[in-house]
Length: 239
Image (tube, rainbow, N blue to C red):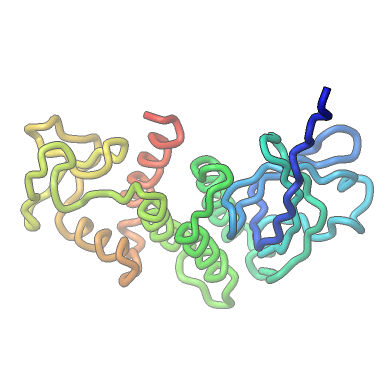
């Protein structure tokens, strides 16, 4: 009988962000990495808990450069090298900033497709982490809300805030409108409306923030985060 051919292991060197870290076995770690070149990967870091010499840089928030060995069809890659490419020390030392960054990393961990490059989402996430690392930072929750709206667009789920997502009827810019983030944006009353009410001024400001030109004022942060969380939850659950 012909000898079976073992799938060839590919080596991937890329920048990455650590989005998950779980003890695995007696000495290993199971890690989730959001990579620049190939999206989300799950990998084992063998011996990482026994010695910090091989993987001294397995910390979230910092920009990493990693080497992965990837076998076609395998559920887990193997992490063989990790180094800090860009440290974010101010971010890592501030609890409020850490909480915001952790929430954004969780978003990406839950919705990014495996082994698929998402360059726009990668840029948005790193831009948020860099801004949170600055000495003088804008309100972290506002930065999170802005990034969340743009992450939705980066993954192809941008919210529609100018017309009904069901019938296409344009929304009067001077009128309040109902929104259903799980359905993708505004839903007119004829089509059933939605759980969130957007007044004209906040809706205009959120539209500007989605385009990346205008910061979200703190007063609009709660409704913006409700929209983002509602949309992400719907997509993560496949509804």
